[in-house]
Length: 342
Image (cartoon, rainbow, N blue to C red; front, side, top):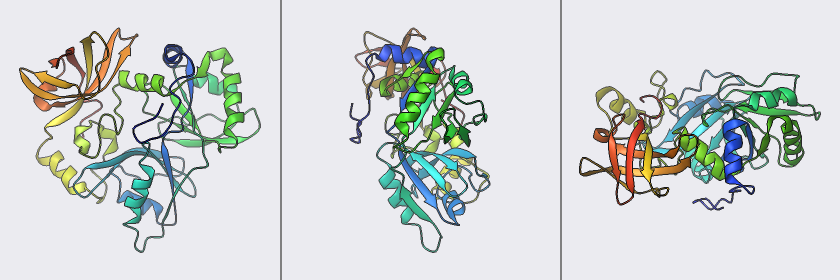
């Protein structure tokens, strides 16, 4: 299938339902070729980036990481990013199609900073997702434990002989780790992971099953649930913003909202009663007035309903609020805010 930005991804490997079940009960292995990746080098890399993202990275030691936003001067989100700090560089994982835009965004601010920003096209991330991931990793490599906390990075010595960089992930709702082999080594590593995963019911999974899993967990994605028109507070992703760090681009707007007021709309998780899965963009009505729109939806067998994410006016965002999906069906607010208040 083709994403909105033009990127081609594997939708499924024959059975979306079987792949979804592997993610829920066992292990799904995804060849995740859709994120854009940037590498930031140079002596000033952490100080420079700390002034451009909403999360705190200045004090992160090699092997650590964080989740945050890049903003413009008016506080609008340009991209969300997972930041991984290595010994000689900082890696930025970005939404599909945003790499060039963020590289240009950063380059505009490089004046005397000793910083270089470059795309990483030589990696093929392999992501393991599911409740039995740690069991698979233990059988795959008993030499060194994988990273423990989200966004941590470490080297794993695998049974097939080579060390490979692995990171803990935190945006799937279940345990997840990503291997970062070079593109030329990815096929061999994938075969080794599938072989080690036989006893753990592991299987290849495509984009659609992963998308369904994250919707169930009410984890919003840039480009689907929020974008350049949104402010950090509207996403509910509190972990992405630090209010104790120094200045960063867009901070004034974010701080003013935090300390003096609140946004008028926010992302919420919803459960839906409808004949079929409603399309993103479906209008939502609360107490007779338009109150927002559906941004993502997927049928959830384990929840026995249709799960969704919606951008709602504050007045319609209370837990348990009853909503109407215009011309489609009904919904109820099931998670609000999605994580914690920003």
